[in-house]
Amino acid sequence: MGYLQEAHQNHVKKKVEEALRSKMKNKALKECGEYTKKYAECALGRTLSVVWQCRQQAKELNNCLHQFTNDSVLEEMKKEYNLKESGESGVRI
Image (cartoon, rainbow, N blue to C red; front, side):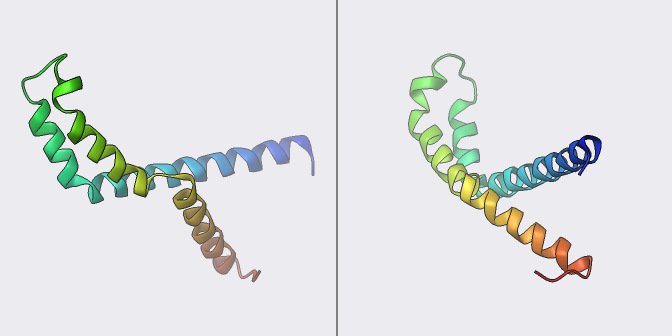
């Protein structure tokens, strides 16, 4: 494989990974909407005090988001994407 072809293939893979990460984040925000709302309500009208006044809400939100945005979730999404791509191209693995 030539250098340019390899560079192009890596660029495509990067774009796919970026799209999957974006999809993963959007799903996490949707799934954790309740916690996002609680944090936003706590933070409303605050400036610096949000750090200590909303610590519990921030922790709950981060815990929820982490369930949907971690390396194992991303790897699973990549597997699903690759299976879909190989099925559409007619190649069976």
